[in-house]
Image (tube, rainbow, N blue to C red; front, side):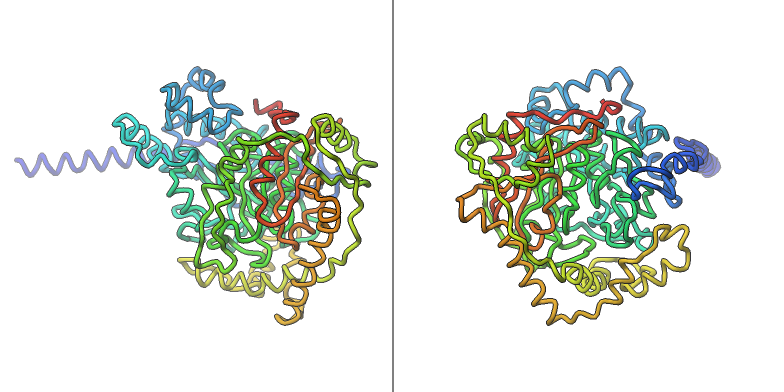
Length: 556
């Protein structure tokens, strides 16, 4: 009899479990839609790169991404969400920590707030930015554990402000438990451990919320194609003007997600402009650090010469916190250095703009009224403005750095970082893999990949190119900086990102306003190597004085 009862109970448990699984399968949060009308609307866009061939991904099913956490998100009512808005929306990390310490907010509620916004906007085809490509199914549970530790008075691990803060990662950064695709179907099932910077984030207590879309292969695949597009994630859209303004690339998802308040902050990567561009286009703060300040181990590469990760946030203090939380000497990265630059406290101390000597570029003064007005305001705040015309320098061979580096660096990444067999081993096999289905895999072609194969530059020739370009880049900035004892040179968006890239100089971009069309525009500070702390101070001073950033109207 007992055996009979046990069998019945087992059968009931199995039956209930199957019913739950069936219910999950039947539940549909998102329906694919016909995006042909949207594509047609953009067919005559004045910007050729915004004449899209598709909007939604042909590869991912949002239900697979959003269903696992749906029961948790349902626990937050609309009334609770509205009550949390003044505590969280647009607030910096120090304010969030204050609310948590005061008992007004919990780590769990903080995570649920951001998830609520992601579900609210990303599951609606009229508001989706196509930015979220993966979510950490354990993130709510992880936040709950932090709350339990706090209740017990056992928060001995709280040594960094990033602790308990939900962070999004660009989808070329290795993350355990989530695929790292680089936006490519060839990498759709790429299983990895954590990248070095992700390990550092977790060691400091950050909560990894999920992964965001990017320009496929960090925008080193096709020529003249839309920024923010990948075969995996589809077309990322700008919250300040969906299908109207570019997202910037390649860290498009990082920029759009931060702008729309989907997380506290996000990590992007840059080779030449890929943090500065999307940060500027989405009115957020982005910092491209000196090469070597942050590790590149576990990041899908373009160029081991120029690649770097960096923080993207709604404000300068948060960018400093995220930058500091990722730093550390990495033995596996030959360029990695250990520098205690004081970046964490930099935005909070000595932020006066008075007496700071900034070089401003004459042709930008003549052509951009917002830049000109910002420079005038800096003068009013006591900054010393020196008008400069940078020297003409050769950038010959720049493309070969990317070509030859990627030809060697991608196979090395696949060999050392991936934990499962992928359908490609190198650029040659990637080109062949993509060519088998151009409609799905490469609707905009793969001319840059083909260019990699065609480039015959030798390793020895490349070394000369790298050296010459570093000298050219540094001369471009140093000539004026040394002659006039400048603290930094001021640019717009990613206009001078290429020169900063080859010089291996850091740069930070900060919102400075909006064009008449509503498109964001930012002021970019560029300085010499390992001057991140100084850049953060200048940026914080500018941000505090001008308060230019506005939340996107339809995502407030």
